[in-house]
Image (cartoon, rainbow over all chains, first blue to last red; front, side, top):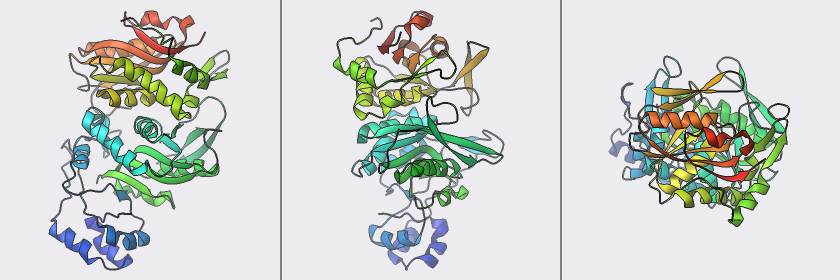
Length: 249
Length: 183
């Protein structure tokens, strides 16, 4: 398992994990590659991290960091995916920098690569369920499910699914919302991944995890295209690991 | 080529048997065609996508427009397989940035479908995808949106048609391809 260490967390990391001098050397050698772009640029801020397999096991055991796709600065797929995401300021309300993946979907190579990165990760992990969170999880989940031979299970806002459902409530900034799944869609013992375009506070994904766990499913991982790490969504996911392609501050 | 049902294909029956009909949803008298059970069968789901991909792969389609939300399930796999862009057509206020909208009628009142400005260009050849065609109102709105920006709508593609609702006639002359009829 590989761990990507955020440059901003390096000092924190050292206090938790055994020293990883090789990783630190890589970081220093690589002079900051994370660039915070001004709010009106249309490209995403992208953090490129080096990863080392040897150091990863120790660091990973001590940390609850989200895992990013292997990023060598030479890997063209991640950079292209990140640059295809459009940032829209002040949507849906002032102060929010909205990460718009629709521009990724317009770039046939970027969309194909996004799916390929997830498929490569999950195809040999005996995943029988891909659960996608409405609505943008419906865009990324099905192609992954089809490629790995898993079922696709939509997790929906209330009252959209016909027939018998189970639901799980979760908190919003003001009030609560619910996420629903069909009774009988999944069976105890199945191995699942949960897909959404982005993890922010982690509230929705945490509710999705609870829903699936209630019916005896093992969630192998949550997978998102984008993470907003400052919102610490991964902390809400309990034991479930998180995998993301792009981290956006 | 006019829209037609892929009658001879043996995969169709497999798909049809997976569709679950839920009575009185969302209200009494409506026999809801639930495609989620198709998605639970990897072979049936794959066959559904394959049937559309086989039909469209050599037709120079540059855009697959999917109608929220179930069109988001079928559209992207088709788009990926044929090398087209995927464009989500959404309920109001979901798409960030600049959009155009088209109004359409519901049984009571109106609703709107929105598309991003700049997603589709003049000359794009487009497919519109949704899980089901009922009255055709939403599909008609989708066709209008695409045509307004100069795209050519080649066909509408749905898994299910409810022919009694005559939606096929509301598609501005565009052909419809569907896999399963429910009367």
